[in-house]
Length: 385
Ligand SMILES: Cc1ncc(COP(=O)(O)O)c(C=O)c1O
Image 1: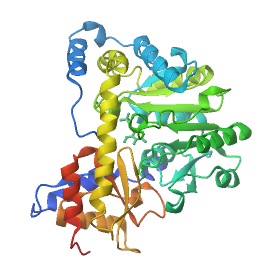
Image 2: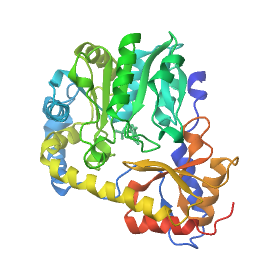
Image 3: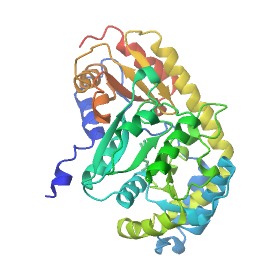
Image 4: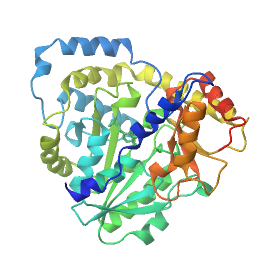
């Protein structure tokens, strides 16, 4: 067994879901807040196009390694209009989900023995990518006192010559924190100065709060050698099983990453690509409505937890609330397991997201509607560890 692989912890979501099997249903059906999936269906017109594409023999052939031109063109236009810049289809690679994108980008920038920097708490798959490849992780601690927004000056002090990239996730998983454009710009400047790459994972970009429309201005200037942007179609289009994500990068990087993607995927699944090529423009209004829905769930979550003040939401946004449990010093695994088995509230422990996170649970509230969120908070009343 490759020791790099054996050294990576098991994926946390199946373990957390397993706890629910031991819950006796006393408080009603188990509420699954473990995985970040939208709790509403895909749009019927997208489903119809998917069915049409599934019946079209053209979908059964291999496609271009970096994705079908129709989807790359649609997505490049979307990024260009959002960021008020020029993005070409040649800057885009379509991947089999954003997780494959981050794996491929980690492999692109770092060899075994190099390092990447991840703000803590981190998205566990970014850390797992590094582990699988024998790449070290330099943690960049972020705290509730700063709203879990990373500090570029602190990052500058922690960088060393083996660090080849910094990964940011905004809106963040697990904290929901939304990084101010000035923060993202400071990290891009740091990456440029040090000759390394800033990777910005924008999986939850379509769920920014009202009024926050452009997450950053990185594409305004000379970005091609030090900025990479990742996106997922899973959440925005409610199609996590389609497996579709995207990388935006300079053409030289896209050229190199094509070698990696050829080995990992040959091409991304084409049925989904065909439907999404229409959906990027065709479902713009629907996505905007879902953004309002998700912002509403976030507000419902804040209101619901006001009734159980000993469980404190330290940060929230997009799909997530980062909840401080009232048992300092106790492991979040223990708290999460007890909540799942005794109250049927299934969450992920903060420890899954990096060191020093034992006081937290991650609630993916996107999965449930406002009344269910209120029910989650009610189930915490009177809970004793
Ligand atoms: C930050 C982040 N990146 C990537 C992904 C994975 O997205 P995909 O389904 O496109 O692989 C997720 C899913 O939870 C995520 O939270």
